[in-house]
Image (cartoon, rainbow, N blue to C red; front, side):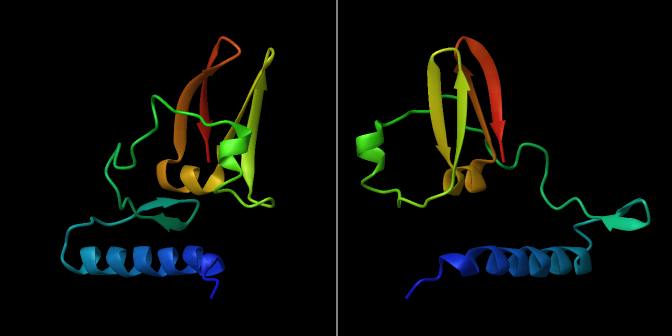
Length: 108
């Protein structure tokens, strides 16, 4: 059974229910209003850790666990190219790295 497509809706429902429960308990203050829309701060600053020292595998090794149609984010700089799997970026959101001698922050 494939449940991969259900991850985002389940995560959103869980986040909304946790936000509602925390708001009811008084753990989350009133929302900030931006352009008439409420913005709730649910996670504290730095609650989602960045990957600061990424480790890479060869394309051959990655083929063992990535599907051929797996979405990835590719970045090139100079003569260097790196690929970041979106399923890992979903968890960490930021990878700090150096590509082609240039410091970069890869975000999702």
